Image (cartoon, rainbow, N blue to C red; front, side, top):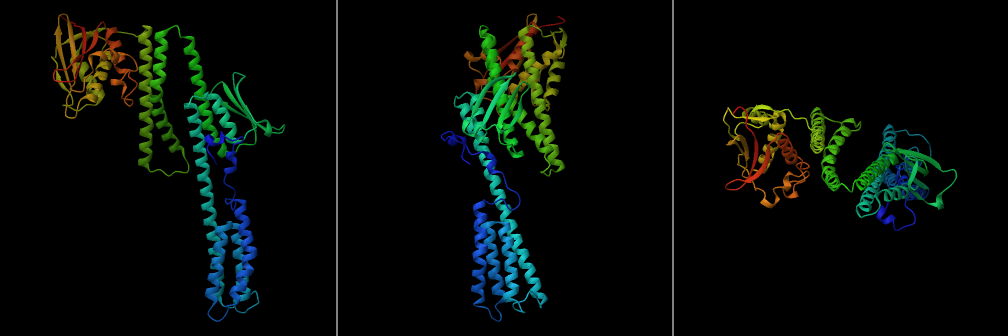
Length: 482
């Protein structure tokens, strides 16, 4: 089946349904089966005459091999049913014309009877192998066709076409439907129709898309294999509808420039980081539920661990997003109290699971600050994670304190690449990463949240150069107990 990129240049698409595997014996095309029947009808008398011309004492083995070759050729050319007829016919001819007593339907030598049975079994087995091979080949072609369709749809959307209309058009072409209508809240949004194949008696099927949309299909019945790839179309339609709704909301909020900028950054950055854990968790759970895959206990444990890690990643991302929204709305609950810095730092190290020596500490045991202990620990976890990530191999981050009048500075020092002075303010903005080059370590909320948490505790978070190279993050809070 051609890809939809090619189909788009033609008035009609070949429905995927034509690539369904047939029942037993039908994996080969009708044309090949016809060739097999013709070979049986023409070839059996021909090979009988040829082998009869050389019949004589000691030629029975040659004759059996000749008929066996004939059955194999029929099996390869026409599949199981022509081959079975060829095997049965060859067995009868072999017994009647070549096995003593000649011209009778009886076999006097048990060895000859066993040879005939083996002959029939070999012909049957060869036929089954050919049929199975053809079936798998046909299935492979179908999967390739499905992949071509999905790639073509993705290319059309990425290429700038209207996502929903492109999906509806390609869906109708791919499944050979007379019409496809996408509805939302009872209103027809997009449709595609081929009047040439539209009939009154066409079967109508409705597929749900998301929570408030539906897809009306009119045409042939859908097979189980059709519904598998249809699910991919439905998922993309649901995603496109969600993007359409978000775009409409963004348009309504355009006067609020800051909120509009944040939403665009959210869609650009979070989309990737949501897809990764969602895809990992979905793949792991689908494999665990699969009935045609044998998994060892170790495989199951690994898949469960993958699903758990993905869900934890999603949970962490959602918590960060909620915290950003609370910060912007001024609704973050703060409980200030006298907090021992060494206790908070040790809690952060335990949360990160760091071994002794992974971070060098220089903390007086008596230093106290006015802070929310939970939020301050989250700030330190974010800062230490960044310091460890950007420290070169063999580099050890340092955590130290310094008095500054009636304030205390908690300094997290690394020897990494640092940040140019002109870019330091940007790293505290939501959805910013170092140089915007790293797309695998989160959505860039850590420093934005850390700065918001520290400022909510009446403190400041700034970035400085580390002498000799690197970056020093400075948390300054009011001292307590002085």
